Image 1 (cartoon, one colour):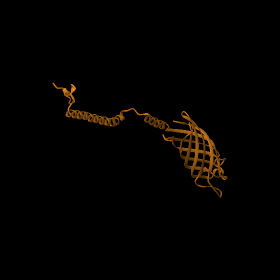
Image 2 (cartoon, rainbow, N blue to C red):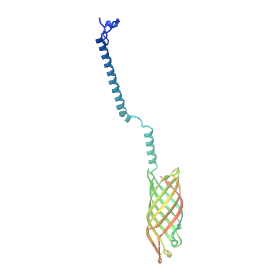
Image 3 (cartoon, helix red, strand yellow):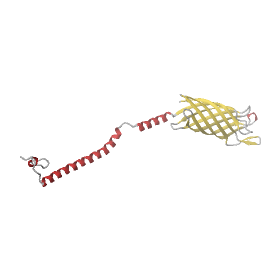
Image 4 (cartoon, rainbow, N blue to C red):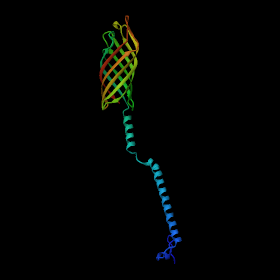
Length: 227
């Protein structure tokens, strides 16, 4: 009985020299195995390229994705309403002005998740016995973090109402524009603030034969609540 393994006969197993035909059949069989091995290798490589893409959706988020989610949550937590009051002094910048002086203001506003603040501002100043000024304005600010404190530059636009004549006889109204900067020191839900600002009427008031704008610059301290 002859055993055939990869084209090798019994005579080959007993030491007889294989013929050239049998050697050729062995060589062909080995070449076929190599081709099959290469084919399996290519299939395995293609599988490693395709399978991870399908598995990515089921994987847990990596550190970068977790960090981005936390950053978005922290930004959202900065969105809040605020109410505050300040007290201080505003100096008339024109020698003819008498309207400003000791005064104060209240404001309310909203800070978005990104560092933009919008709000409304009402202020009143008592220049002297016969001169007063009241202003109502809308304001917008941009928050700059300085560690824990905030620096908030602001722009303001609204209306001004003043008594400019002796005995308060003259009344004057005008659009008003101003610029300010607030230093805000938060503590839990409350905060302390220091504020510098300047504002001016956009129309000229008349006192006798003199026309002038109601222009002043002031400094204030105050505090408020966030909620």
